[in-house]
Amino acid sequence: MKSVRKIFEELIGLFIEDSSLAIGTIIWAAFAYMVIPHLPVSQALKGVIFFVGVIVILIENVARTIRKPS
Image 1: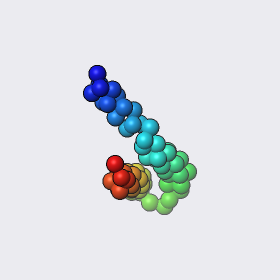
Image 2: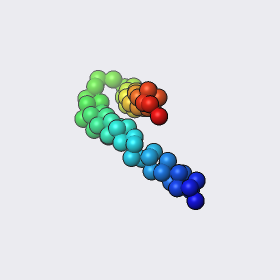
Image 3: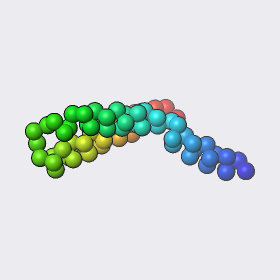
């Protein structure tokens, strides 16, 4: 029973603990929605800009998680 509880806690932790990832992604998406369409670049490059922003947020979150003491 303890192992089931531990698995459940880990699953919940994935969603609650990484709220900074979700918030960062939402902020980036809102910023991109307002700014990227006005950039004088091709549609393909606009997609790349959005993708790179999301990847940067993900890398920062992973790096912060690695540095966090267990």
